Image (cartoon, rainbow, N blue to C red; front, side, top):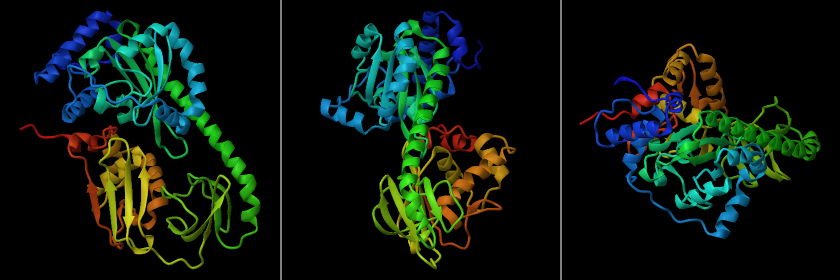
Length: 432
């Protein structure tokens, strides 16, 4: 390997485990001491190390945060949507993990370990590392690892030996994949396979990713069943109504509709209550509870909404939102998916507008990927409506919109999941 090469998982896998660990240890030492390593770490690892240095994580020893108490742990398990799919994860992974001297770990979106099963000897080793039920394995606490790092970057990650930021974890290998809610794209947690250094195998990344997707498919099946139950109750009610009305589940998915073209989903605020409210797709409407959802009845002759301010908040590492304030909309906040957070950030940096091909180049480095950009911005318009204009895409000229980006304290923490070239360029901090 020459001075400009980058380590990849295939190279590590083809090497003797001890030799690979020594190589990674030398790369980490050079990176932490400000020297130029003879080979570069993988980009996902290098970016994570950069976040750890900014967060002040100690690279020499781990920090044990407070374990959840037994009651708090059980409450988190009961409340987690992951509880319904733990049997799926167990059936797919535990026997493999046990035979391969690994353990399976399931964590929530905060990085808290909720469930853990697998090889008994490895479970005891994990206890010595603090990798136990109720522990916090987010990046800001434990450093680069197979739980906290996938939570930030929103994709599967394998972390081998000295790729862990904290030295006390260098005898460990872990592979984690995020699990998202198919109803709204919300991050639910991570499924992880971990074990001693000698058990590392490159196929674990594909295995864990496949099982995470299998779990999401089961969540999708559960959602469709719940929507069918709501439909059996709501369809007769909606059929008797005049005007525009729709029955939706708590995530806005449509069960029945009358007086307007069918729409798969309506954007709902984070908190819903019976009464009256303004919704982007319906305008002013009456809200009534239904078993397993809501009945939304649009008021006649709705007045156009004029927004006075739009705020994009991208301060958090895992959650982002857009808020519309003023006018007939009142206060309205919508939680953003990773892709929509990227697109709205890019539009904020191009206030005069950006073509579909320009956004495709910003997002993917490929101006030809306009179909994906147009499809995603069509979804954005479901909750921003006329606030988002097109040809070129921009915030509408005829609406009083003041875009104020709430940015993280340091550019390196800007949308850390994003691999978009324009976002990566915005993260770079000039060297002093």
